[in-house]
Length: 109
Image 1 (spheres, one colour):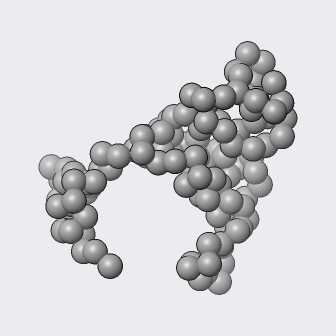
Image 2 (cartoon, helix red, strand yellow):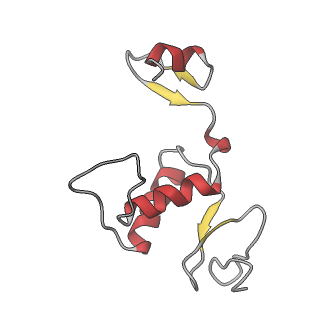
């Protein structure tokens, strides 16, 4: 497992002026698949390598609210992934979907 210094040296993270704080420089490189994994985790689906006795059990709507917060307020996730209000799937709004009457994926437009 790489050390914190290895991560900084790789160029993926930049040290902030305040001690021990780091910001990601690669927010736009987070894929839809990675966001979907977070979305499923927040709903209680654990990845096989993660072991927790108490894990989150949020609804689809609440799980996406967490993702939305990470997009809009913290800037950790790219602001291009949306949740279809009809079927509930996540989609990349740069490549598909419509927001004319709410967010809809291509399957529900």
